[in-house]
Length: 165
Figure 1 (cartoon, rainbow, N blue to C red):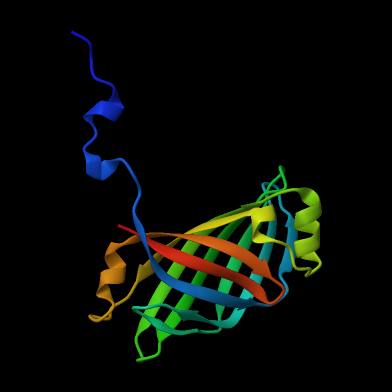
Figure 2: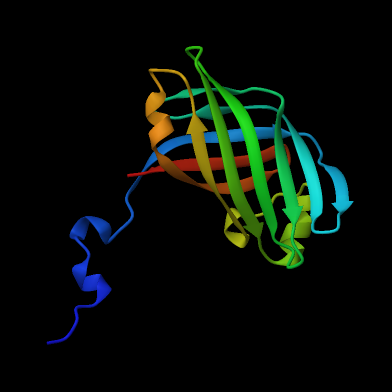
């Protein structure tokens, strides 16, 4: 008797990843302060000056004062560590943090750095947002996982966030 493959023992509910749109957000980010090559990494920090988010279940603005800690790796990929406070249009506050990854052909990354428009299909920008809130209305955000697909515009990144079901 043969041992079943791992694929064969999975229930149908686990054979595909289901998502639903959560919201789109745009961050306004000041030009990054380049800390430079430290002993372990090449560090840059961008101050978030605001932004907005829009979705079927929540919408509002991103408050100034967040930050985007960026690491430029030796393979030219960028890792992102972002923290920002969201204020819903009905006055509730939500903390959003996300880790992300941006990489692509060097000429495309150079064009992004110069503030030029590039196609989002020409490079990779993905993130994993997490949320925390004390709001009863939006408390469901504390209990979800999400993923985001991003694109870098001259004024800052724009992301479409999906709740993983």
